[in-house]
Figure 1 (cartoon, rainbow, N blue to C red):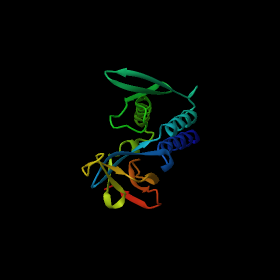
Figure 2 (figure 1 turned 180 degrees about the vertical axis):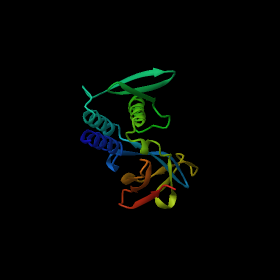
Figure 3 (figure 1 turned 135 degrees about the horizontal axis):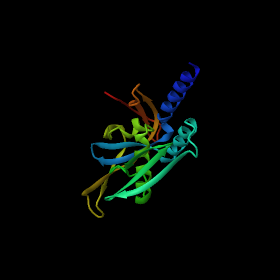
Figure 4 (figure 1 turned 90 degrees about the vertical axis):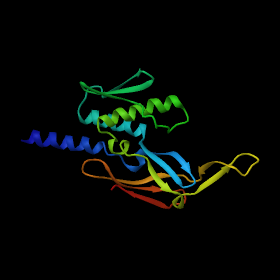
Length: 189
């Protein structure tokens, strides 16, 4: 009886480890228009590595976890092994967190494979979120020497302030903090 309680407790701890805190999430700007900005939230790759280590320790996996990367077609995959089981995934097409394309592929495939283990899955599965222009500062950028608007720039820094989860580990609500301290709230339907 006691062994079942311990295994249940370990399973609950491992499950809770998959739920990332706000500091463990990266806000990536997908698109800026005159009407607003689209953002995508991604698990932070360093935080995911830390959680993988904690999960391996909790599950008493000898040697921890292991990673293997390989190319299939034109996609870089990451395989994450915990014990005898391996889960793998390619880098998501929209993952553009770093200016270095190779680092994007390596980190993107890692967070995708970790999501297959349930680590950061709620954040990973979130679609891009739209924030209207009235809530953020958007600046039109004209072509040099003309008044023709070439593109729009988000003149703000957005970070994740808080995140809450549903019982199924999907994201229930979050708060995005602007540079000036203002908060933009989002809630799942």
